[in-house]
Length: 326
Image 1 (cartoon, one colour):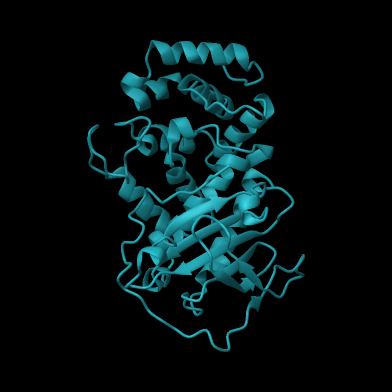
Image 2 (cartoon, helix red, strand yellow):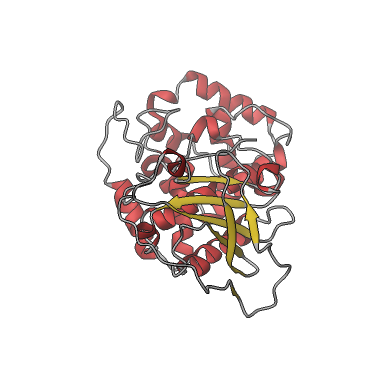
C-alpha cells in the first residue's frame, strides 16, 4: 500500500528559503541512558519513491530512532524528546504497532536553492510496520529547511505528527489500511490528532495555536484552502463541527482510539472498500456510546441526506456489535 502525503494543515515549505548549514563532522549518535531494546542500523539506504539518500542514525532510544541525511543540521535535537514522547503517547493510547516498538524518524534538510530532485524530499510521508517499502518499520519521512526544523513549532512539529496520524489511521488494532480515507481524505483526522497529541506531550502552547488557526479559519464551500477544506466533503468543517465537539464531550484521545478499536473488532480486516458516511457515524457513535446523528446533521449539512440515513440504518444491521442507543 502506498502511503505518501503532504501536510494539508499548513503550507509545508513555508520557510524553505531560509536555511542554516552546519557541519556534521565529529557528531556521534546520541543514546538514551535507559536499557535499550535492540539497536537500529547505523545507516539506512533510502529506496522508496524518489528517495535515494544514505541516512545516518543520530539518536535512538526505546521510542524513536532519528535518521538524518547529509543536509540536516546535527544540532537540531528537540525532536528526540518531543517526537519520542508523541510516539510513546500514541502507543499507550492507540495500542501497539506490530513488532516494532520504535518509530523511525527520517529528517531531511532541504537547501534554499533546491533543484527539482532535492525538492522531492520536502513534505512528508509515512509507512506502517507492515509496509515492505520502508523495511517493515514504522517510519515517518519529513523534509524542511533547517531554519524551519530549528524550532518545534508550526510545520516542524505538525508535519511529523500528521504522518504519525496516518500510521494510526491505517494500522491501529491490527488493521492494515485506512478505511476512512473516503471520508476524511488527507486528512481531516490529522487536525484533531495533532491537537490531541500536543495536549498530551506538554505542548499546550502549540495545541492552542492549532486550535486558533482552525477555529478562526474563514472559508466558504468553494474555498480551496487546504488548511480548512476537504476534497471528499467540500464545505464541511470537520474540526469545528465534528471532531472537536465529540472529542471534548466523549473522552478526548480515548474516543479517537476507541473508534479504531470498534472498526477492528467488527469489520473484516480484509475489507478494501472505504466506509460510507453512515458507517462512519455508526462507528463513532459506538466509540462515544451515544447516538451522534444530531451532530452529523450539524457537521455534514446537506451531505447528511436520506442516503446517509439509510447507510446508518444498514450499518446498524451489518455491525450490531457496535453498541449505543438507537
